[in-house]
Amino acid sequence: MKKILLLLLPLVVAMLGFIQKNNFIVSGTITDAKGNVVPFVNIKVKEGGTAVSADLHGYYKITAPSQNATLVFEAAGYEAREEPIKGRSNLSLTLQLASPKVNEVVITGYGQKRKTHQTSAVAAMGRPILAFENKQDYYQDPYNTEGYDYIHENIFRTSAENPLSTFSIDVDAASYSNVRRMLHAGQVPPAGAVRVEEMINYFQYDYPQPKQDVPFSFTTEMNDCPWNSQHKLVLIGMQGKTIPVDDLPASNLVFLIDVSGSMASAGKLPLVKASLKMLTEQLREQDKVSIVVYAGAAGLVLPPTSGQNKTAIKDALEKLSAGGSTAGGAGIKLAYKTARENFKANANNRVILCSDGDFNIGMSSDDAMERLIEEERNSGIYLTVLGYGMGNYKDNKMQKLADKGNGNHAYIDGMSEAKKVLINEFGGTLFTIAKDVKLQVEFNPAHVQGYRLVGYENRMLNKEDFNDDQKDAGDLGSGHTVTALYEIIPIGVQSSFLKNVDPLKYQKNGTAAVSDLANEMMTIKFRYKTPGDEKSMLMVHPLLYSQKKSGQASENFRFAAAVAEFGILLRNSAFKAGASYASVLRSAGNALSYDKEGYRREFIRLVESAQYLAKKPELINIEIDAK
Image (spheres, rainbow, N blue to C red):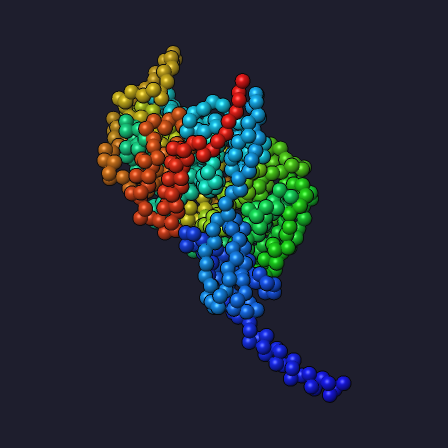
C-alpha cells in the first residue's frame, strides 16, 4: 500500500501544479454609466467556484479556473452582466441601471374596457392622466398601490393682512430621487410626490460656513422671478457647520430592517443590505450597531456590535431574507427599546428604518404610528427613514414617520443614491447639530404687496408656534444646506393671484412701515436648539430692498430657482405663470460651477427627459371611457 502511495505521490503533485498553473487572477474596478464607482458588486465565475464582492471603492479581485472563463457581475438596481475574461488580468467594466419592465395592464373606467401598454409602477394616485394636458379623466392602475398625500399648494398672502409667515426647516430630499426614478422610467410623477422644497434641498449650495460659535450661517438674496417677470424671488439659505468625521460623537445605531415579503425584489432588501454594508464601512471602533428586523414578528438579529467588527455586521446583514407579513409597529417598538437600553449620553442615538413603508399588520394606522414616534422622540433618540422600492412604496407613511420622529427621510433608488446619502452626506444624514429649527418672516407692506412660500406645505406653522419651545420642528445635520424661496408681488403690481376681501370693521389695514425702517423688505428670524437643550436661541436678520439685475444673480440663486421652476412644472402649479423647461435649462446651465459630484449636470439631463415626455404625451398611452 505504501509503495502504491509513493508511486502516486508524484502524479498528485503534478496534478496540483497543473491546477495552480492554470488558475488565473483577475482584478478591476466597476463603475456606472456616469463614471461613479459601484461598491459591493457580487462577482462569480459562471462555470462555478470562486465568488467575491467588490469593496467600497468598486475594486474586486477574483481567481478564475482559466483565462477563458466568464465572470458574472450582479448588483442591486443594475442589470446583471456576463463578461468573458479572454486572457485579461485587468477587467474593469460599466454596469447599466436596471430598466423597468413593460407590462400589459387592463384599466377599467365606467364604460368599456380598453387594453393599453404602460410601464409598470405608474404612479397613479387619482391625479389627471397627464399634468401636461390638464385632462380631467382619472385612472387607477390596479398594479400600483404607491401612497402620496395630497399637497394643498401655498397661496399668495397679502402682507397687510398676513405680515408673518412661519415654517419649520426641511432637510429631506426623498422627493427628488423618487421623482427621478419615475421620470427615468418614462412616467409622469403624481403631484403629491413633488415636494418642491425637497427637490431644492437635494442639492448642496455654496453658502459660507458659520464663523461664530453658532451651528449655521444664513444667506439672503433677492432678484427677478424667472417664471413671472413682474414678481421678485427671495432666497434664504442656511449652511450647517461641517464637523470632521473623526470629531463626530460616538454613535449608538439600530438598523431597523423590513424583511417582509414585499421587500423581496432587487430594488428593496438586496439594495438595503448593500446600502447598510456601505454605511458599515464608515463606522469607527466607538460606534455600536444593533440590527432589528420585522416581518410577521420583530426580532433582534445582532446585539450591539462595535463598528470595528465590520465582518460580523456585514455577515448579519447578508443572512437576511424576505418573507411574511409586515408588523411595522412591533419592529419600531423593539428598535427604540434596543436604542434606549444602549443609550449613550452626548452621543448620536439613532434608529435607521429601511422599508417600503407598507405596514399591514399590528400598529398600521398613520395616527397610531405617529403617536408612537412622537412618544419615542422625547427619549433623545433620532430617526432616519430610508425608503426603497416601487409599485407599493408608501411615501406618505415614511414622510410622516420622519417628520414626527426628529428625523430625516431619503429615498434610495440605487447604489449611487445610497453613496450620496450614507457616504458623501454621512454627517448631515446621521448627526444633528441644531434641532427644532424654525423661521418666521415679517414682510414690510411698504415694499411687499403679497408673498408665497414656494413649497414647505407640510412644514407650515402657526405664528404662535415660533416662540413656543414645546413645538417640534425640523433638525439640521452636520454640513447640511437648507434653502427656502419666497415669491414676492411688489407694491404697484396688478395680480390675479391676490384675491379681494372685505375691509375689516374694527381695525385699520395696510399700515405702512415706520419711516426709519422703510428700506427693509422683510425681517427673518431663526429659532433653534442645540442637541440636548430645551431652550431655543434667536437670530434676527433684516433684508434690505435692492434692485439687482437678473444677470447679477448668484449661481446659488439661479440653480435653486431652476429646481423650483422644474417642480412647479411637474406639479402643473396654479402659479406656474410663464414657467418653461427652456427657462429651467437656461438657469441651471448657467449655475454649474459648484458641482463636485455631478448632481447638477444630472439634473439637466432629468429636465431634458421631462421636457421630452411633455412634448410626447402619447408615450404614456392611457385611455378611459368615462361615460
